[in-house]
Length: 200
Image 1 (cartoon, rainbow, N blue to C red):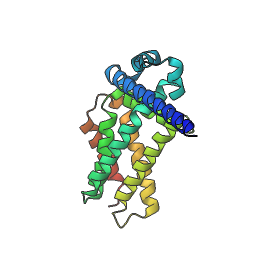
Image 2 (image 1 turned 60 degrees about the vertical axis):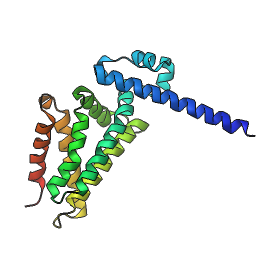
Image 3 (image 1 turned 180 degrees about the vertical axis):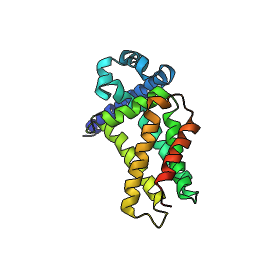
Image 4 (image 1 turned 60 degrees about the horizontal axis):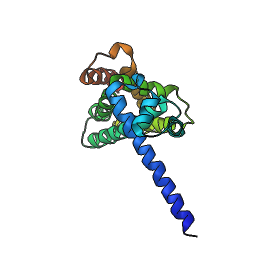
């Protein structure tokens, strides 16, 4: 009876090792060349697997990008949450959450814009898209918590405002006219827009 659990364990380890190789290969190639310039064949070759095996883990390059980026965005959000905890002002706390997300998105601008497009227009039932949307929801919860520090902002208004802040942030990062802007310029643009939303 102990044979079956060992083989399942080995199979799971092999699957995880392949997934790790795929993520490492995609991360390196996407960072070096950009997602649009990389083929799935190149990723499979670098991961030392067949393309058929690759497609068992991700059906498209968009899914591969989500696979690579979701963990980075989750880390950026966690950093923003931690930073916001130490800041008193509502606007500054919101921007503490926003800044690391913008920095993450702008590490490779084309990849960042493609990630946002995949997140917004991808299949929400697909696990990697679902995970990306969960990160968005967590970001909005963190922003709502920061907004709720202002006694004039009800919980319902904080949630609505956080949704608006999220939309402003994503549009600022994704829009073509902002491609040439630095992280600081995008953060300041978002800050100006968020400031207008806050109660006076």
